[in-house]
Length: 139
Image (cartoon, rainbow, N blue to C red; front, side, top):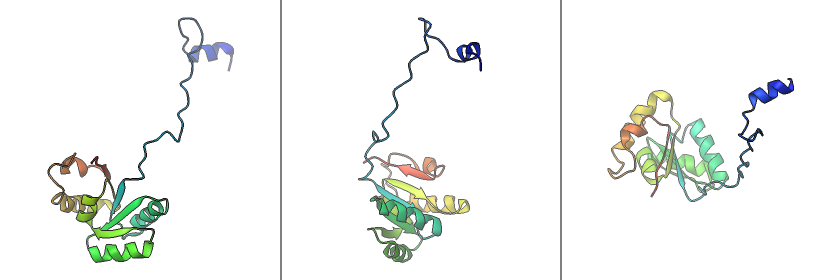
């Protein structure tokens, strides 16, 4: 690259100098999410269990959900690290962030079952939730 190529690619300020770079962001300057509860719908499958285990091992509060609460509770007991188990609707209701770890074909059915149990005062609607694989809710 020649000096004329470099000058043509870098926009100059009115004084003719290159603009200053924005300061790098501190990677530790992030919001504290340690107090949030993460729910994993479909948490008894291999993908859901893997996510729940890693999040809990890192210190996050995790609830895994399943169509059957007893299956979720058994899986939570296997994972340890304070992971709790509940049915999918209860998991969604008690969580600040929800990860949907079910096969794509099951998203609609899983979320519509959960939506019946979400309070009407929730910060988003069931129709917007169904388009997403996770949801964050402020309390």
